[in-house]
Length: 632
Ligand SMILES: *[C@@H]1O[C@H](CO)[C@@H](O)[C@H](O)[C@H]1NC(C)=O
Ligand SMILES: *[C@@H]1O[C@H](CO)[C@@H](O)[C@H](O)[C@H]1NC(C)=O
Image (cartoon, rainbow, N blue to C red; front, side, top):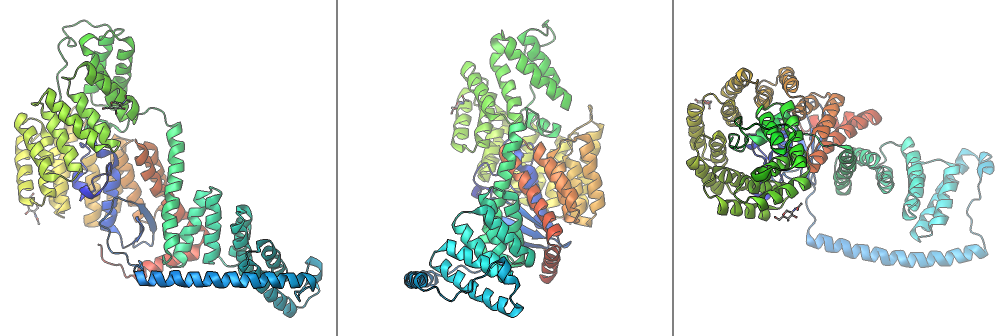
């Protein structure tokens, strides 16, 4: 299925989330979340790619998710118009336009006449209107409004504005305000549109036309959050039946998210992602000993390039957050100091690795380019550059880099493992399985090839082979927590909850025992999901996420899962905080946009609840109305 998703779209499946997939791990949290939501929702509408989920708690939220081609059918979707219908409508429109023209001409004539002999329109102003009876005012207002509509029809907007204004003087009415706003819209006087529609809405808060008009004006004024709120309210009022508003919600959500993401990116300094993320990425390459020339037999002072390189590699091997920070700084310094001799390509490779992790694709690419130029036999640089290409959506360049790597060292197991990851992400599962197998044949000791082979078999539908692969892998790598974690994910996917939880528990226990204490918190989060799905135990699930966040405070997957758990329970404002945190922790621009989309959808929901309590109530009844539609 991932073959349908354009790169760098993530792989959508909890089991294949595998943060060990360097190229796809970026969006993993949102894949998990989507999958999770699809399992727990009560009702989902799809608004042109934005899933609106109304949960049993009456909570609505949006999932901007273009990577979901397999959406369930849309309960509120109107059937598409047929061709003949469209043609008919077109003809009608044309006729109407002609009629309109004729009318306009007639009005023009009338107007001329009127100028010569003023027509019988009531003359009113603030003072005269006070002397009129209720009855007269009403009659005048109707007359003025009709004249206003006529002027509007003949595109004489200034006159229409004046007439509606007088009608309002006689008798304030939301329709008059909204019509005047329509005139201002045509004239692009957006501030005035906002003013008039706001007046209309203060009289009738569910006036859809006014809501849509104000939203459009806000959008022109680049007040995207306000526009989003209005379009959302409008969607709820008319039961999501208006395609234009539905599309607008999606568009605005994207605009808001992109604008905010840009601001975040501008202020965001260089920063490593969570320790879990860094570790998972680094261990997707087979560990190598310190090269001769950098080992302890050599006396290297810290103020030499080689000394810094050695220092960085030792720090990196500590597998802690501090160690990674230290390593990043040391590699930077190593290259500043220079005089690296035969290790220059390696130093470039390592600095690029941390630049990539910090989300600085440009710098990483420049370093890797230089690294392969200096020392083509260091094929890891090709592999890492391929990951980068993939993340930037350039699949062909990634493929080329693997070819180059193979041409320099066809027996490097890392190449096949990473090419398998690429193929996996592209949905070429049979090819991926072949590459994992080749990687295993070259080096059986690298556990992730086994794990990923099992996951790939599972995705190909060979459940029995997949489970056999995992049983074998558990036997051969019984002291590696990851194997239990991913085994558990497959079991969870099969709803084999008790077995899954047993595996997660085992992985958690082993992480605890390992020295230094393991920082991989995925098993904890997986257990949280399992408990939530199985026992609907949201409290325990929350506790487990909290635990994960104590171990790795910057773990985006824990933060995202927490947000969803809270949202699911209707704790919307708390959920919002976690979504915002997720945006802060996000590494790449698309990841930030994704996180902010969730945050903004949640914020909008909160605002709808606050500003339109009656609408929130209606949504609740909508959820109830669809009678707890079965989980799809
Ligand atoms: C690195 O090399 C690739 C070709 O493989 C090229 O497309 C890219 O622009 C280079 N990047 C930098 C930053 O030099
Ligand atoms: C759950 O998984 C275990 C393997 O760990 C298997 O023996 C058992 O039959 C499975 N149970 C179900 C209900 O599928």
